[in-house]
Length: 128
Image 1 (spheres, rainbow, N blue to C red):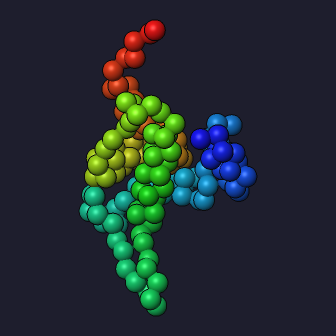
Image 2 (image 1 turned 180 degrees about the vertical axis):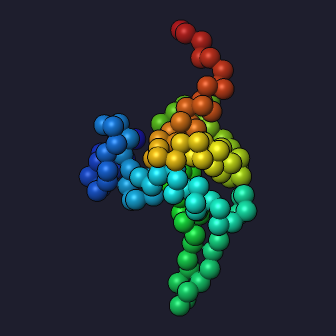
């Protein structure tokens, strides 16, 4: 795990508030951008297509894939008994509701809040 973290530190990225590293630009998109992208297709569905033989994905798809990867990374840092699990329509609906109310918040922070809210549902770990 330490080797993976060291490798990630060598990759180009954007540090946000000193603790969250975002690679690529989708995590730094605003919640308003996510809401606009989410309106392009029904809940739980994304637009895909092919242009000149190249597979293309909608902004909504790319943003949700970023969030799913971000949540996976957070799960990897937690114990196996404390994993956030959700389905794509539920995640998308939560993000859409939160982001509609907070359009200027960055998508990465919305994803982090989703994780923290889900983590509150974990049973308390007994002290040893």
